[in-house]
Amino acid sequence: MAMTPWGEIEVADAHVHFFSPAFFKSLAEQKGDPDVAGLLGWDSPDSSADLAARWVAEMNRNGVSRAMLIASIPNDTFSVGEAVDIYPDRFSAVYMANPTLPSPDIRFETASAEDHVNGVFLFPAMHRYSLHEQKVWGLVQVLAGHPSALVYVHCGALSIGFRKKLGLASHFDMRFSNPIDLHALASNFPRVNFVIPHFGAGYFREALMVADLCPNVYLDTSSSNGWMRYQTEELDLARVFRKALDVLGPKRLLFGSDSSWFPRGWVKRVFDDQVAALRQIGADEATARAILGGNLMRISSPKTTNSVV
Image (cartoon, rainbow, N blue to C red; front, side):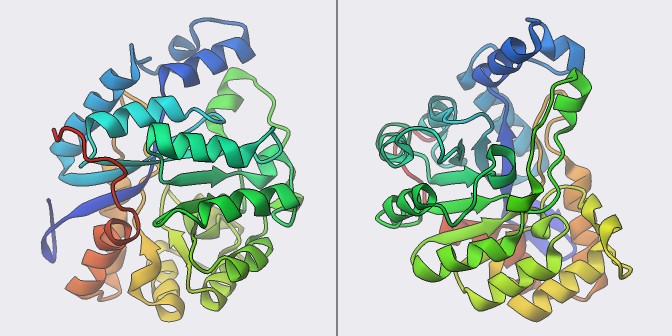
């Protein structure tokens, strides 16, 4: 529980990157340097279990009850699966899926059964594909057979700071970053819940349009939301929350911090800024409880019932 202006609230974070040993190994191979953690000034975990334990301690310090972990290299389901196995009451997980790789549907079935993931995280601009492609639809069709399955779809501006710092190229294609492309998928798979992170990351209007048309589309509120500088109208976080609530109501916004690396840990400043914005627009207790944790708890059921820590 976290103390807020509305009293103690159960907080669930919809956007926490899990930078596993496999993640650092992948970066080291791309950079050609085994000490990428040192170059970045980050801590490299000894194991996924150790990283999961560190996240639980961090969550305990900050009053965070549950987090959605994101496996941040393609198909790194074992890493987040181990975290979910050890701490099923604290974590759910999705993984970065690239539908252009072989057999993405079979990969998800295996990941769901063996690693207890809740869904996938798609980066169309990063992997340069359209959401209208058959492989994407085939993958989502498989997810539709799993209750509580989630599909995160990153839209809008995509800039990965650690890749820039390491001097690694990022060949993204912004043609595939518009939330409007999600409309056909969400309309045709109404039992699958889709999440657009960062309020659409610069496509706020388009994200609101799709979510308004499709009741199975959610927005997550994660990161510093620096995309607001791209808007032609003057926006701040309070105005963004007010507009999102006006269009969608309180049940389809998911608090997210976009936390990722240690020693920084959980980015409490993001939480504090969002609480302040909600308070500024006069959000009531029910709205705050829904956004800060209740909505994610409702749509992401635990995948295992192993030991509880």
